[in-house]
Image 1: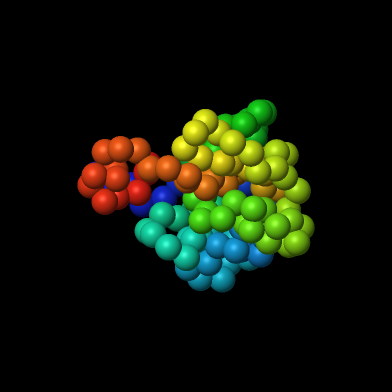
Image 2: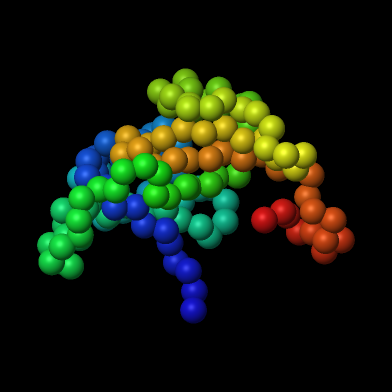
Length: 140
């Protein structure tokens, strides 16, 4: 089994698409600002965030239900320099719910929401775990 993507069900597809493309700076695999589906990736790695129009998926499934209340997903993006990422995203119109700050001894984090209210965590790793240092890998 292979995880290919995490897909967010969204109601205002164009607004959410523009947020992930223009504010967060993720690269679309193909231009699809009007939906009903898009897949966007960061500059590094194989991970992707996919967007799916909620109404279109409800038509496929026959039902989907109302959008949930409260946070139901957390998108986590690692950055090399949290302060620089915070400044860059703020200049693009992002409004953070919590600015850069410590999260334990190993990382610093900042939080913002996309236009649908999905929570996004930016994290900067300060110190890898011992076993990852020995193996030459990055922290999880």
